[in-house]
Amino acid sequence: MPLPEEDPQPLLKDQEETAYDSDGKVLSFGIDYDTESGGSTVVSSFSWRKLWLFTGPGFLMCIAFLDPGNLEGDLQAGAIAGYSLLWLLLWATAMGLLVQLLSARLGVATGRHLAELCREEYPTWARMILWIMAELALIGADIQEVIGSAIAIQILSNGVLPLWAGVIITASDCFIFLFLENYGVRKLEAAFGILIGIMAVTFAWMFADAKPSAPELFLELANSIGLVNAGQYLQDKYGGGFFPILYIWGIGLLAAGQSSTITGTYAGQFIMGGFLNLGLKKWLRALITRSCAIIPTIIVALVFDTSEDSLDVLNEWLNMLQSMQIPFALIPLLCLVSKEQIMGTFTVGPILKMVSWLVAALVMLINGYLLLDFFSNEVTGVVFTTVVCTFTGAYVTFIIYLISREVSISTWYCPT
Image (cartoon, rainbow, N blue to C red; front, side, top):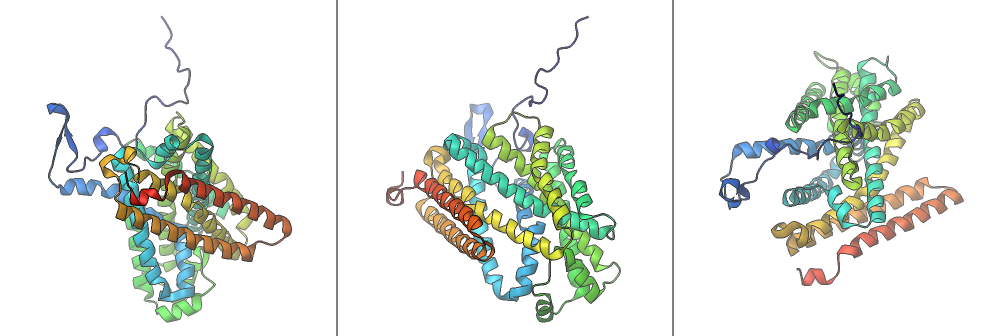
């Protein structure tokens, strides 16, 4: 009896992977195709069911506004500035919505994501730099998210579990991700919806229990609030009703951390698979992606577990790291949605194109100013200053390359 042949490459994926299975995709009204009549275009009517199916990706995108890193920044900014930054928050949200709309437009028109298109559009050396920058941004965000989950676990365990143990527990979310994805991406989106609902309920519960006086709260919290002590502060000041506010905060923070870390794992699949075109099985790719973030996070947890102030400083550095990566996603996105060869009839018009580039320029200028101010205060010593200046020169040069490669003055007046 002949023995069955073994897979000579067991770590390679069996077939081409897509973000959604064929039965999970949504065909937009107006661009459906009638395969029975030879592939002719059929204009279909609006459907609430189709609109509801689009909310799943919306859940994934909104996690970016709810992760522990953002919660840390919101707490500190609100404590120091009060309500004076609300208009800035509104405009920042509007600009973020524009970028998300362009990203969705690119995906709908091409059927591919940004990393795949960058692999085809840029030379190898530029593509590798873009991949490294994307991985750095992912690692920076993941450290904040995993640390946030670890802090929540530490709170809910009454300090029995140290920060590094919470990090190891949180690392298991990649296996949860793989388990849910086996049942389809729609199940994964439903899990995100549940976690977002938990966050909404817990934060609303805290506000209802505390009934804080905003001016008094802002004055007392200035320069002293963070993820670690926010729950304890609210517990000491307001106590809580049926359920202690400290634990409500811990549950909400855990939901925020878990949803964002699973989202990071999911994004890592597309970053690695798109830029490098690696034919690895899902579990191995997820393991590699999580290891890139978990290993430095465990080191961070061991080093910074001794002080709340040190965690706040770490978050500032991580926020700066992520700010530095914005041009390397924003510029390729704007270049790609402006190319008719890629977008076809979905190419952005001249007005939207100009508005998008103005928004991008504004974001990069603001981030450049913040980076300059941050490093001018933090960087000391001749060697460190030389390294930072050299890196800054290379950084600006690569940004100029990305812009000059795709955009010329004539395209503003003579669009193709």
